[in-house]
Length: 177
Image 1 (cartoon, one colour):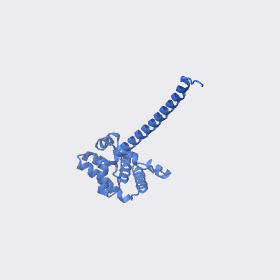
Image 2 (spheres, rainbow, N blue to C red):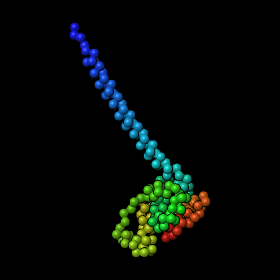
Image 3 (cartoon, rainbow, N blue to C red):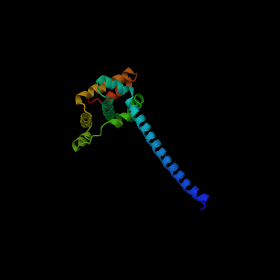
Image 4 (cartoon, helix red, strand yellow):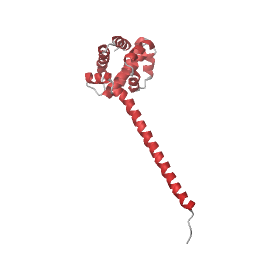
């Protein structure tokens, strides 16, 4: 009878154990990475979804929170373009996650006419801003007639919560409406 070498048995068993360890480790790493990504995505979307301003405006206007986020983002984007950095910073203190809203604003390509209007002074800039807001609201399923109501909702919220100065600055940044 042939005698088996102890090392001959141990080597395949060791290889199998190593392969199982490596495959379970990579599976664990993938699961961990996927779980981490899901948590990150949830926290990013919760930041703006659970916001009191969003809920307030959605209830006031009878719209979904997603639509309100995009609409407010569009308004804040235009206000940021029309106000000094210092004045916009005061609004940002009242609405700390304002950049999350702006990120939800739809991107609209501007025509050469709109670009030209924006460079022709205050009246041209107002026309370009109205054109952007009109297109942005249309893209998210709102009519331009809803612009003043959305602005009133956010400024009302700010007034109600002790940020009357920020509400006034926001109205100033959107005074062409």
